[in-house]
Figure 1 (cartoon, rainbow, N blue to C red):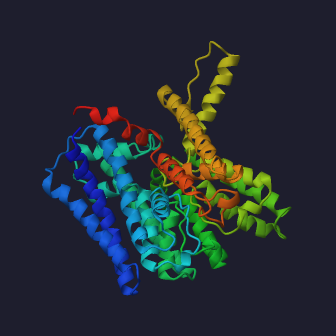
Figure 2: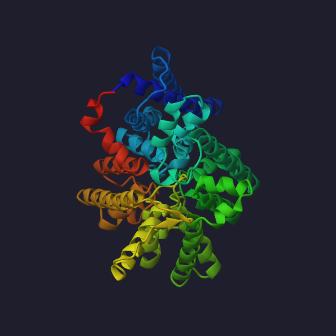
Figure 3: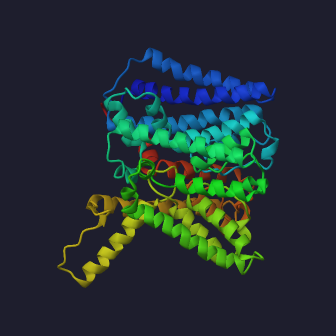
Length: 482
């Protein structure tokens, strides 16, 4: 294993972080904040550690798949480590454990926070929190590839190592074209949402940070009570629209923007994704109307926002869903496991895998009834390989096992079952809020320190889709010869 090659490419990722740290430092400097030196020192550290391997290690573009995987996982882990430094140096509620949790939550776009007084933080720190969302939402390696398109075959390997296997079937194009597509869609919807939030009455800082969090389906807000603090239906509608868009496959968004609506019309994933959200919003609004709200329109407003927030793994809140009836809470937990589409910024099992699982179940039932029949699984009129079907089912089972193990571990620390397991599902799906003491208007400050480390690991497993992190820590991986 060529460690020097791995560190060279991770250096580009560290420099990307340095750029956003520098902007955050500039904001702190402008407002003369106490966070200036923590952010500036971290910027210097990032520049030094990022530029040294680039200067002293010669360019290599013939990396192996395993090396590409190690670069991707190493980039995520080191970015999370770098991201916690400004928090620790600034102090306040940021112990080492809390700073690590907040940093991991940011980069994985989970949006779960340990902070009880978000509005007391300096603007520079708040912008850095939002930036970690925006970097992690697009994907750290995808971000680097977008600004360094000349990496040759190495770029292709890194692209395939970073992208979800469930998403690769949707991007039937060269890796360079796919990266460019993702970048422009990501930038475009961020700029558009920021502009609309400004028109809706938010100041520039809140508009940018909330656009960062929405498009990344992250959920970090600059307010203690999240989006509920704005008391604005217009703001909520704008964020709902962009949460829904950000949960769609970016290849389909590109097709819609370029007028190729036929691709969207025939997409089974898009129809299921939009349809299930409409159905769930209707069911939850009816359930909460009869139990929590005085008018149906009020119930529809809060239900639609919370359902889309959880269903896209964004995690914003405009209401306290922990006081909703058990039926509505259970639906939110199911959405927490599923989330949105592959090829989006959303976490979770992904709609694509759920559809393949349903179709494989349908196939099994038909084969039981007709043992001699030859039945194939198709999506969008294309055959789904048996290998993809098997890997999908295995992934779902492994995913649920990790959630169960994470929740069990946290209950062993004295946390109640509802909070522990809903929190575990929210961490694995990179959703953020759960139920109970980690509800939509609560935070994770009450979780024991060890529980925060367990949840941090769960967040990373969810963002890297399990296997990458496991392979990274296998001794046999590092003993492989090039």
